Length: 139
Image (cartoon, rainbow, N blue to C red; front, side, top):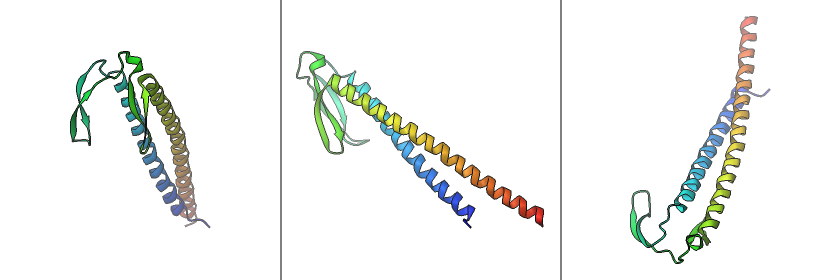
């Protein structure tokens, strides 16, 4: 027969991994939300800004819009690891919105899996307690 302690450990390990993925997705979603809100605060004319190179290292830069019309200004958007594209601010905003919605959908799916895994762990614990009660009654 299958060892309930082993099953419980497997499910708890699975739960830990899923929770890690969930946390990562929520952090990614927060970055997309931050990027999207930054798009609305870009200066309409030439301005200086501090650009982060790392979490504690910045470089001074000049933001110089190439277009006189704010909706025609372009930004460089990371499409994926190592892939970038110039997009208008409007297109970049829509791109970020799609990313936010996708990460939210994936996080919600993982949240459902977390709930199911927790229920599995609870069922295993209840089974183990039932067997322990049976053995105690027999003794």
